[in-house]
Image (tube, rainbow, N blue to C red; front, top):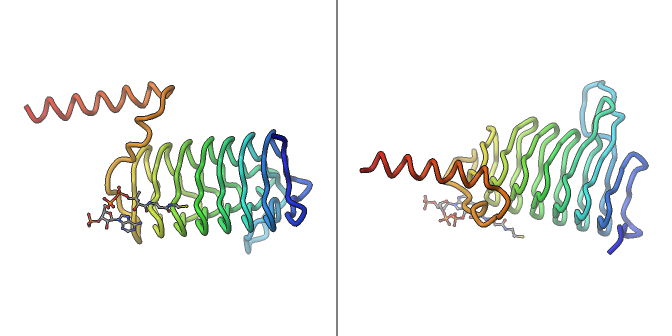
Length: 185
Ligand SMILES: CC(C)(COP(=O)(O)OP(=O)(O)OC[C@H]1O[C@@H](n2cnc3c(N)ncnc32)[C@H](O)[C@@H]1OP(=O)(O)O)[C@@H](O)C(=O)NCCC(=O)NCCS
């Protein structure tokens, strides 16, 4: 597979695409961020290898010469939006209609449900699950699952436990479980 851009998509010259990226119909990547202040709105967008961007997705470029970064192997579903200066590590899943406000930082394997919205400049940790329709107004630490408006924690996103290669996380989880069991004895 090679990088493919649908003929109706708009990809600004400031955008750097990795290998095997797909960009769907009417996607608009690399336009100026939606900001009312007078900061310098020149910046770039980096899209990691293997990322799929579906129809009508918008990704704004960074500001002040900085980049908006979508990590490798991410999947941005139709009509989702990524604001200026957002940075995500690999394997983001952004469901249809979901929106990430400008300047947010996301870890890896973050999963954001249908129509969820993330307030600007928040940190969302690795392996977090953001429920559909959530309104996230506070940072979310690694592996947590949040739902509702305003979003509240309902537990851990156990999905990460299935991943090989994340031994550090597994180790932390095992330690937490052992500590819990000791307390219950
Ligand atoms: C967040 C999510 C993973 C939770 O799933 P779960 O862990 O199985 O949670 P449960 O269904 O057991 O629900 C736990 C509680 O959270 C509530 N809840 C679950 N999802 C919710 C949501 N999206 N918004 C508000 N409340 C929600 C439930 O009502 C329940 O509340 P209660 O304990 O007061 O009864 C799931 O509901 C979700 O939103 N998935 C995303 C779906 C999606 O967008 N898919 C993309 C398709 S392309």
